[in-house]
Structure formats: C-alpha cells, structure tokens
Image (tube, rainbow, N blue to C red; front, side, top):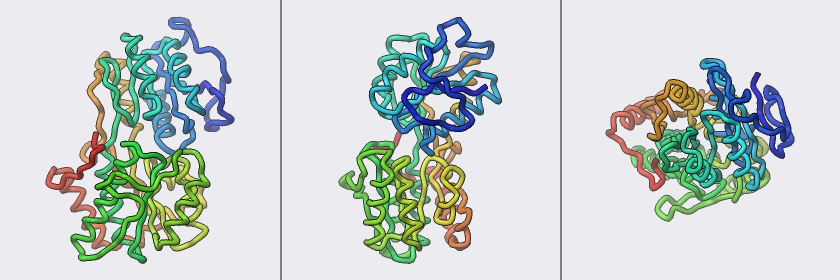
Length: 351
C-alpha cells in the first residue's frame, strides 16, 4: 500500500492513504521491510504541485512497483514543517530520505551531517555532503528548444516568461528560453521579443511564491496586454494562473515545466498547451533506490540532460499542427548539436 504522512495539508493525491500526524515508525520496528523503505519530504508546494514534488513521488511509487521498497511521503505546507518533517523521516529508520527543493537544503544538510549512516537525495538543489546525492537537471538545454519553438510559432512576435522566485532552478529555465528565442532570431533574421527575463542582468518578472495562482494570472495578463502569445511560467502551481489567462484571452499558448502539463493540469487547459519542459525525475528516483538497495549509493550528483534523457520537451499534443515540419527539423538538429556538444547552452545556474 502506498502511504503518505500528512503534516498540515488538507488533501493529497487520491491514491495516497492519509495517516495524519501519526508518529513515524521506529527504526527496526516495521519502518523498514525486507526490501527497505524510503521517506520523501516535500517542500511547501505540497504533493500535488504538478511539478517536481509530484514527479518525485511518482518515481518513488514506481520504485515500489519495480523494486519492492516501501515509499511514504511527509507533506510540508509551510516553512515550519520542513525541518520537523526531515527529522521525522530520519527517525523512521529508512535507509533513504528524499527531500525536494531549495527550501529543504539546510535541513537536509543538518540531518545528513547528524546521521552519516542514512542516505539522502535532494531534488532540484545541490547539497555537499558524503551521504547526500543531489538530483539536478540542466533544464536550460530543453528550455532552449522550447524558446526556439515559441519564436517559431508566435504570431505576434512577442513571447514571455516569468518565475516564482529568482532562484537558480527557476532562472535556468528562463536563461535557456530566451537564448532559444535569440537563436531563432539569429537564424531567421526575425526580431521576436522575449518579455519577463533579462539574462545579462539575471533579473526579470517573478510572482514571489509558488502557490498563489492569481498572481500568475495577473502577471500573464500583463504580458498578453503587451502582445505575448506564448508564455513560459516557471512557478509551480502559480503557472496555472497563466494557463487560465491564456484560456480566457484566447490566441495564447503556454509552455509548462517539470511535468507534461497535458497530463497533470486540468483537461480544460489542454487546448492551449504548446509543450512542456520536462524534468524526468521518476527514473532518477528508481535508480537511486536501486543503488541504495545494492549498496552502490554514492554522492555524485545526478545531472539530467538531453543526452541521458533526464530533460526534454513534451509532445505538442493538440497544437501539433502549429509546428510545421521545417521548424521541427530545425529543433531536431539543435537537439543533436546540444547532445554532441557542438552547441553549448550556457547559464550561471547550470548544474
């Protein structure tokens, strides 16, 4: 049975059985079964963030199915939950603790230092310790393709991006996106504008959080008023506000991030989803669990790239007809050049 320990949250995925604030099992008293167990701690975005919390949990569920490990999640709803949840995960007696996001960096480091015999993995953040494996993604490679695509399909000559906060895992997407737009302009002699991010200044438009959907809607409406017809929100749940604005205004498409928004967002947004910049966290989780089980766990970072399949762009789904074969051919060539190392997508936030 897949379970989650709920700390202060109202609801999680329907497939998860809630155990309220029940204490974690003590080490050696059923917390770790024959094939081991793993505890995941979400950041404040919660388990159903349609982003890396959700995809990390999906990966651990996959590890349950494939490897027989017992996976539980402790759901954080605010900053005050983070450190206690990590401590509870450690006290479970599980061999592996997985934390998600920059908010958990310090709590992860502190717990790892105090518990050198426990293996830790942290998603979307780098923590240096002998028993911590960072799981990071060079999303600039995939978002470069998304930016090139956006510049190729825009009808207004204006595209846009915004973030939830000015943090490396966020701005990495934005750097790649605006570079992709710039490359399209260079190749085609066009002047597509990318609003919302200045790569040279490393500054741009941010909502200041990853939960307030209305902030995303307001910011997206401002971009639409300036002519943007393709928008990349890098803001977790806040991005759904941009999708709502796109549906209401019409003639605007969205590039989602982390997971395929076509599968994770409400169906009403499918007609406006151009593509998604994917972090394929699921397989990374399965591989790390397998390494812990086999005794091969190491703190060497996992870096998802186009080459190893850790990042990519999603299918175009309902908007496939908007991408002409010539443009797709250019994208395929760019992908090959990046994988071959002939084209290097650079960012101050590259992992």
